[in-house]
Image (cartoon, rainbow, N blue to C red):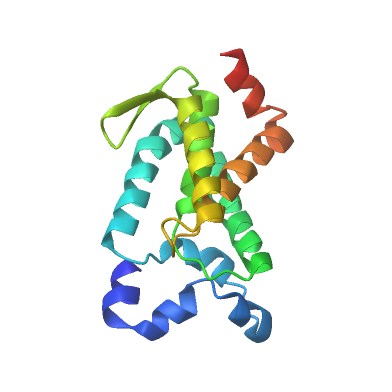
Length: 177
C-alpha cells in the first residue's frame, strides 16, 4: 500500500487516506480502515512498523491472534472516527500503535522500553511520557502536520477497550506496580 500510494498513484492515496470530506460527502466509509495502511513517507511507515513489531509480537502471544486483531483494528477505526468528527485528514497506523503501547504497558508493566533505542523507561512511564508529549505537541503545533491528537486518542481508546472488554483499568495497573 505504501508503494502504491507514494510512488505509483496520487489517486490511490486520496482513495485510501482518511479525508473526512470524502467520507461525509461521497460515503467513502472504507477510509476509516484503509487510512491505517497509508503512510506519508518512509520514516512514518518505518516507525509504525517497528512499533507493531516490538509491541505486537508479545501482545499477540498474550492476547491471542483474534483478540489482538480486534483490538488493533477497533482502536484504529476509533481513531479514524475521532479524526472524522474533528474534520482532520489522517494517514498511518500511529493511533493504533499508541494503543498497542498502552496494551503492552498493561500486560507488561515492569518491562522497560528503550525510547529512541537509548532511554530506558518502564512501560507505564513511557505511556505517560508519550501521552503528555502528544498533548503538548498538539497544543503548541510542534511537529506540524503530525496528527498528535490521534496518538493520544489511541491511548485513550486502548484504555477504554481494556476497561469495557476485560474490566481492567490500565491506570490502576500502572499505579499498583
